[in-house]
Length: 66
Image (cartoon, rainbow, N blue to C red; front, side, top):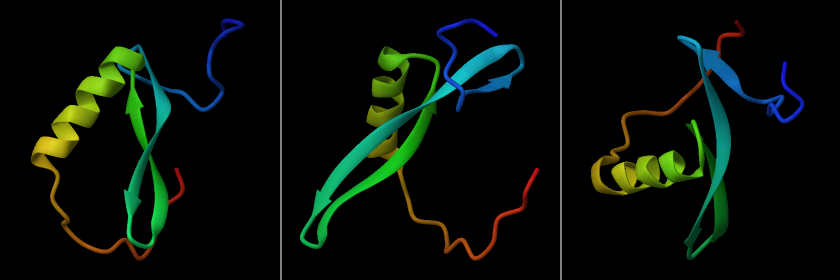
């Protein structure tokens, strides 16, 4: 592991995906979600895609540990 590797990153098909924090404001306050990308520029591109195409698909009621 390199010295600058993010400990929260995941490796998928040999590519390191790092978590980036995304904030958004509502009448109820400011909220944060995570977005995984390979670098800052990629994170911005993914955020732009999210803003253009996001849709709510359901409530998450459980998570499976891997």
